[in-house]
Structures are given as C-alpha cells and as structure tokens.
Length: 181
Image (cartoon, rainbow, N blue to C red; front, side, top):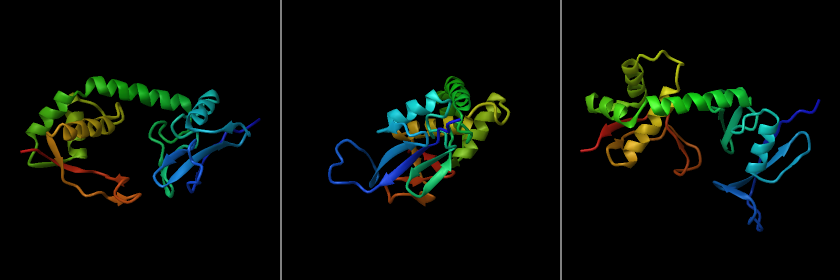
C-alpha cells in the first residue's frame, strides 16, 4: 500500500524563480512519498483530494504557515482527512448564513467600550442558543469583525501576540477591538 504523505519544502529563492510559488522570503515546492511529481500547490491539492486527504494541509494534519511556525490544520480539525474537511466547510457555510453581519454589529453595539473576539463569540452563541461545537462560531465572528474593521466601523486595539515573519505575518490569539468614533 502506497502512502500519500505530501510535504512542503521551503527553500531560498533561486535566481530563476519565475515559475515558483513565492511566499514571504522563500518558495514552496511539494513532494509526495509515492513519487508523484507535484510542481505547485494546485497539483499538490489535487493529489491530496484524489487520495482522500485534506486539501488544505495536504493530509499532514498540520500546516506550516511560514517556515518554523506549525499549527494544527483548522480545515480538517487536525485529522488530515478530506471527509472532515468537507464537514467543517459545510458547518462554516451554515455559520455564514446563521451568524450575519447585522447580528454581530448589534452585539458589538451593546458591548462595553472595548471587547475581545471571545466575548463577542460567546455573546453570539448565547443569543442564538448554540451549544459549543455546534458551529464554528469563533472563526465566523472573527471574519465578521475583520470585515467591520475594514469598513471603518471598528478599530483593532491589540498588538500581535507573535511576529511570525516580521510585521507582515502576525498572530493574534484573542484580539481586542473598540467601536470607531
């Protein structure tokens, strides 16, 4: 039985890097243990899907966002399996229709001067009567808060918890916002 373990290889940018995928100071190439050539991300994702692997983490159950920073795959809940990825995508789509921008906006309007992502997510869960684990409430609320921030309705107050690749790639664990004046 052939294993289909797809790995990401980070290398320095060579002089003839026209056909490579450039990512934050390096480039990615992909390889599978079965020997199938995977010249780019699209080929790697297709190969993963053909073998019932998550197309986000390529079946590894973890994602290396930038060289040296690895996190559990959120698309398949760290299983590496395609079925779990599809279930999560369906749940997120349901969360998009259930947790609307107007709902989050109304909760933010009732909150104190500043609020965190987790506080808004808990308020959404309580307002809709959702038990934990029913829908990906946190990721959906995070996306809506970023949307409201981009529209100028909110101001992000938190400093990043980690600088992964300088100021261009940062990590926030539980960011704090306030309503714009």
